[in-house]
Length: 125
Image (cartoon, rainbow, N blue to C red; front, side, top):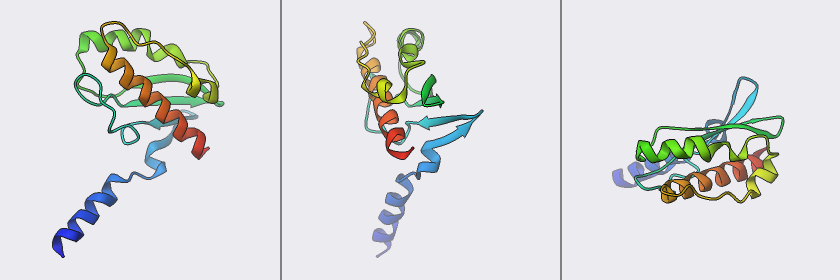
């Protein structure tokens, strides 16, 4: 009985409410992909993001703490995260983006995080 109660508690804690996934910050909706893509791994682990949306367009995307190799993840921050900036959310969700050479696993993980975050936003707005 105690084990069942403990497992139920773990299950309930892992389900984050929409309020924790989509928040407001400086007049923008902010989608946090930490729990949306917890099964998506880059080279060394997950690559959670915050996607900032203003007026139904991507304002910018910010990488959250991760364990990726800093040298390669710097390339992603510089060359990949801005690929969705200025796009309408629906168009951004369908955007085909190339991976960064040398940082393939990390790039694929970031791209999947963006996709999941924007799909979630589209469902909840």
